[in-house]
Image (cartoon, rainbow, N blue to C red; front, side, top):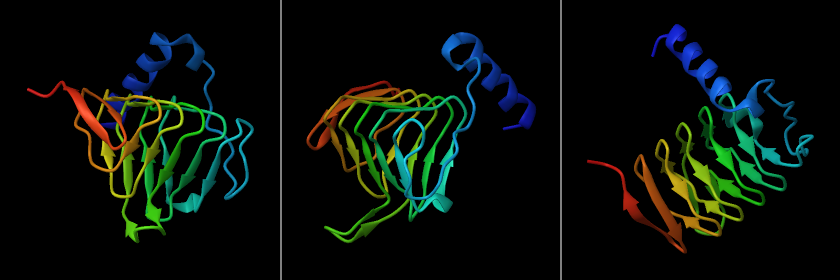
Amino acid sequence: MSPLRNLKERLQTMDSNPRFKDWQYPDIVDGKPTKYHWIIQNADGFKLGFGTDIGAFSYINAKSGVTLEDGVQLGSHCSIYSVSTIDHKEGPVVLKKNCKLGSHSTVMPGVTIGENTIVGAHSFVTKDIPDNSLAFGVPAKVIKNGQK
């Protein structure tokens, strides 16, 4: 994607949602709560897209990499793990553009959640979810798949 196209998309995001008009990247200090009360551990592995919204009391462990693309929204109390000490899994997590993760949901290592996908609250995501889908549950299952 060209830098100019990316800029145009970001400006469209701002125009379509006035609450992002003055959006700025937050200050992130490893292991310390941001002014919005969410925490990133291993911040060197964290990539934050433009116009994102991370709910209060969310936790992200980015040791093996976590990417939140433009327009991603996380509800409060969400957890994203690129490393799991319980089952010894590890891998990058990617939340694609404009996906939404409901409050109190957990995403485990190696998972990609597709563009424009919605994951319902209180879900436990252990596998990839395709673009334009609706998923929820423990473990999360795709209920509606927007793929053709």
